[in-house]
Length: 438
Ligand code: UGA
Image (cartoon, rainbow, N blue to C red; front, top):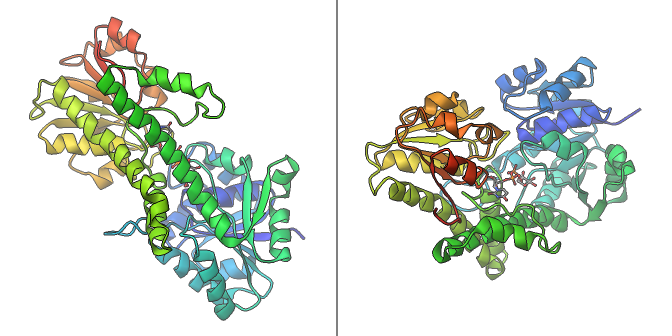
């Protein structure tokens, strides 16, 4: 009989993991403590926007391989392999991760687990967490094994990244735990996915090291953008030129408003906090710079907006293209674009935010801004537009048409994705981060 799996937590990671494991043919039960989410998922609806996920979810619910519950007992009794996919947000008032959900879900699950079950941690955690959970399980659920299996999926590509990952990493202490995970991921291993077996701390560190590297790469090119701005050079050409060196590579080298979201910013901060606890603080002081460079892009964009508007923000109409932290997502957590919108509104500008999918979430966090899902309406009477999230919708705009509705044709491309020549020849004053003024 094939393995039965439970997935604890149904956020971006858990909902995707549950649906994709069912897609691989396993019987899966997903668990969330929020009844409303469970009801939506059982009804075949994804509580957030993620391309392709709804189809996979519905197909597997209909096939009878996937259902959701709020009962830890039901999940524990149904499955033998239990994936922990709950969130580890930044603690308020500290850089460290808030581990309440991870330890809480293990405590709730433990009394119902059966000897021989395997708990698999997927949440992004401070190194040392797996060892602590192993101790917790040894007391609360004797005979239950643990593995650590970090997840590398990107929002917007979550299904693809889960079913066709670059690599699988598992931290284990026992042969049976490895054998069980080889069985779970057999279809992916058969397709040639690299499968790395490590100890607990290495598996935990792989995840935060990868995200730190990605954040560093983005802040590196944004630091180059700052120098380009000072020297009158062009960071887009610079990035293209260095990216041809395959040791550097051109991916994740897009200069602009920098990184946001629920992962990179909080992961580098939690990593610094944990390194401090371990006495290795110095090793990661560079991540403080990475964070600072990233946040400076936001304040620089606000300054550039003021500059383009003759030094006056108060009373000016500013339209922001994009509320989410990246395109193809409705996630507004630590969104650079929304941060800029709020700073401009606080400085007295009249701000309208457009986004194809993120306005509902954005309005929940910042109810005082004005939102629109219609590009033309959002841009009407604008003194300035800021392109803050690179949705394809904005690249498809005809600048010759849009110019008719704005008050003054000023645009800042804070993502370096618009065709500057096309916008200029349509009559716009366009500025782009890290690129020379006309
Ligand atoms: C990130 C990692 O890429 C995933 O591998 C990881 O699994 C995930 O975090 C996680 O820890 O769960 P994600 O947060 O979905 O994924 O988004 P990214 O695609 O990494 O983008 C992060 C931010 O960087 C976005 O705001 C994006 O606009 C920005 N970015 C990205 C740039 O500013 N420049 C670039 O060249 C690339």
